[in-house]
Length: 214
Image 1: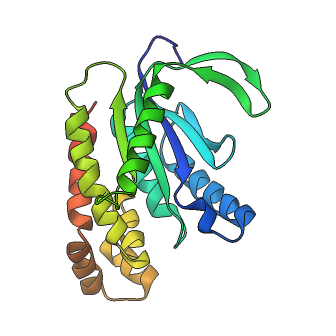
Image 2: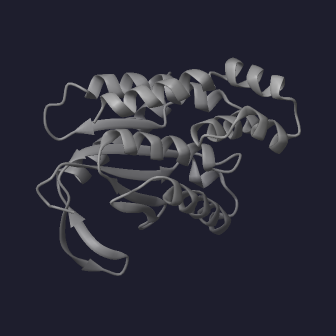
């Protein structure tokens, strides 16, 4: 990474982690889910655990980071959820430590502000919020991205496990026939589920925003 080039830093922590009885199993499940995302979405720095219940990654631009965080939520096992803070700015390596390189920079500071905002919203009337975006410099996309994330998070938070699997399959280019075979249901049932859950809107919105937010 060029220290002077703006990137998207992503901080992740576990929502309501203290409610899970087996912390080791919880960590292992999330690491497995994020490893799958790392094979699907190109990253400057893959989503990996750091300390405590946090993970972090770095992406080249906002469209890629949005796709990665959406797939990450969809990949998580039932009953497990995470918060995501996306920060646009610079990332600088300033040393090394037991968990890898030690980094600093405006992207991480704004990602921290973003995840704090997501946490604040989660414990408000917007309890479905899991993702927020901030930029270290004036960015007229900030409000648009967060407006998209509000709708995205509400739809995903309301989905049952099957609806999340079908949305994930659509995002990865699987056909309705393939999804029907995997779920053991009819193609018509898949089509109805995608329309009813809001998955069709999310797929279309993800594609539009990925192009517009570069």
